[in-house]
Image (cartoon, rainbow, N blue to C red; front, side, top):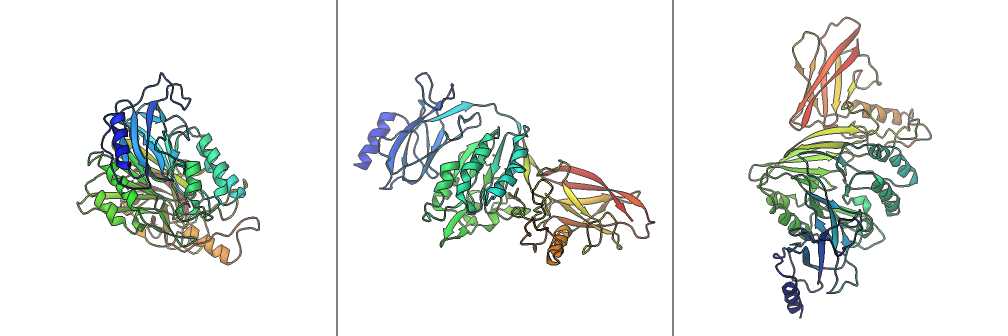
Length: 500
């Protein structure tokens, strides 16, 4: 009967393309609907509004395509989320209209329509990659609203943002007020599911339900300006509170189906919470992406900034950017006069996020510290490594440069007076500012009683360089030019002053 019913519906709807994925599941049911151009933006299909053909629709596993009337047909199971894979020249009409959760009561005559509106495509565009807001109570929610969310509300120079998971810190009750503030920002936002976004009062299978209710699917895709964006759920629950980084079979099917729809040199941006290098079955993804030459992974989770370059068996290179956290080191550290904690990350990076600028099919990165000027791309430590912050040069004439978005492919050099250009040495050690905070806390000199101590101050920074001025310098003030080059970052130069 299930097979006969399926055939009848396909015949009734006309020429729908072949459904991809695993359909022979007895607990699934056939549903249908329409993707249409929502001209009056009222989020409902009116008689004068036409369907949109060749729009992909998915449940996070299976992918189908609408026919010439905009109609689709798909099998679904309880708990799956239906959504269109929005093409570049369209966007969703409403924050909650681009997805739908399949309920218990879904029947074989169930129908759901999706309204899209037109938008202009661009050869150049900017989006923001934002890691770990991770608010755990109303105090931290207010700190987020008065820092990162305030900054984004007042920016109008980017196209959309991607929040890379851990929106809350094990407190799903904060989803509603946080989502309201995100939706009030006048730019589209795409959300990623993190390990601290789980509902621990639910079963393992249903831990993501509250996230889905407020923010939509945890596995989805969309196109924007000749770039394919894919979001994956990197969290597999273990025990009551544990987890590991594993891609499920349905996600692998979804990823495989999506990348097959684009050419091998098409830019693909994959967003997830846990860094790709930390995933247990990443080799399965490497096989899927083996032949693709322009893949960028975005992740959060570690509350540090770093980059990886991973080679595929075919010789292509996958670029991974772990973007840090706008909560910094979990909203801890000495509070400012506005009540916002310093929360310097373990790698020495201030709270912030990344701007990613695409031009045609290439991109450049730029780190943006929250409430910091755009030119604040690095920090300078000029004194003794185990001393205090100062502008006086150390006795050895050594100093440290932390270029926040640096990687193993970054070169940092200095130009000093008439001396030849000198390249600084990349070092693998703790950022000196972080080491100072650690000493101050162990000696109980900071923070004050109104602030929280910063945890986890033990990791070396992955973007720290050491330089040295010539010996036998006369006492005085000296100007030094710092020059940075990186294949994924615009050339950067900054002048600093050091006292001898």
